[in-house]
Image 1 (cartoon, rainbow, N blue to C red):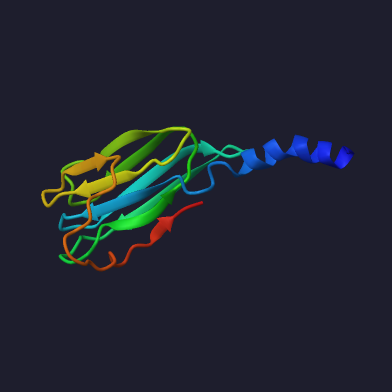
Image 2: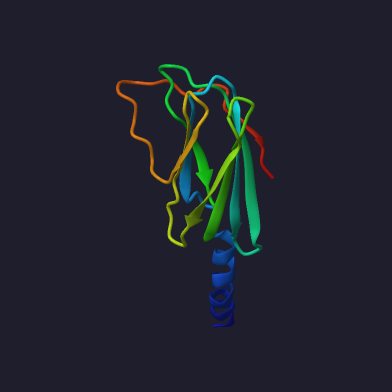
Length: 144
């Protein structure tokens, strides 16, 4: 009986410690400008210990036939996600915040057009017509 009681009392804490670490959405990026850009995503604290996640991603210029760069899984807790885009080909750095609800998913789309203007969305992009190849040379440059 004591074992079941102890397990019942500990279960919410164990579950709370894991909440927010499972992917809660996706990040989709496309850089149509001529220069690479750096995208920084700061997710709100999550989980039992309240740790936040910051990911810095360098996105090279997109080439015809490539899909959106995707598959960056977002796993922050409820609050606001801060997204910033910097690069030498942009007229100026751009940033936004996107609310992250308690109930996922939170999808993020960032499109840098050919003139360097940054467009943010919380919608998943429409797939390109026909088949496309993986966006090449995409590796996080830092993530704690």
